[in-house]
Amino acid sequence: MLAYASPSLYRMFCQLTGFGGTTMRASQAPDKILEQSVTVTFNADIQQKLPMTFEPEEKSITLHIGQERLTHYRVKNLSDKPLKVVATYNVTPDAMGRFLNKTQCFCFESLTLNPKQEASLPISFFVDPAATEDKDASKITTLTLSYTFFPAKE
Image (cartoon, rainbow, N blue to C red):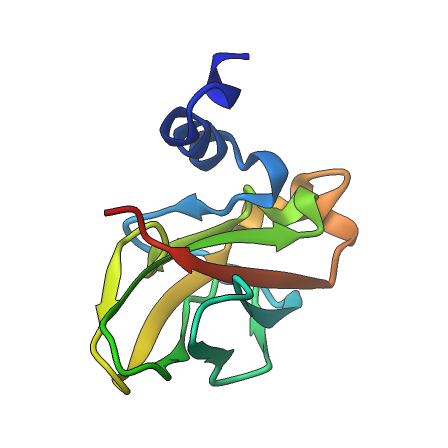
């Protein structure tokens, strides 16, 4: 498949299809909020050699399906030099990737942190009510949203 040949094409493919637990982008949350809830846990990883800390401000959030929520991740450059990084993300289980929609996210955008600089990175998201009609996703009550920071290419 051509999408595997180029990281940019692969990222676009994953964002359009939810492949590999890639979340979807949305401009706004749905009007329909269900009584059914789901718990979203948050994970933060860093490529081993990056001199930084990275963690979610909340370990998990329980929300109604269709309800939009805002939370933050905290990041800090521990070095004495500017640090240019970029984050990628995924969702597990994979079946929920296409139903977790983000209206605001820091992923795939280059971020430069000055020496010792700390930042709060917002993410706003919701779980699409269509998840309750999917044979695999409808059984899932807990999912994990995971971000990993890597050095950004110059």
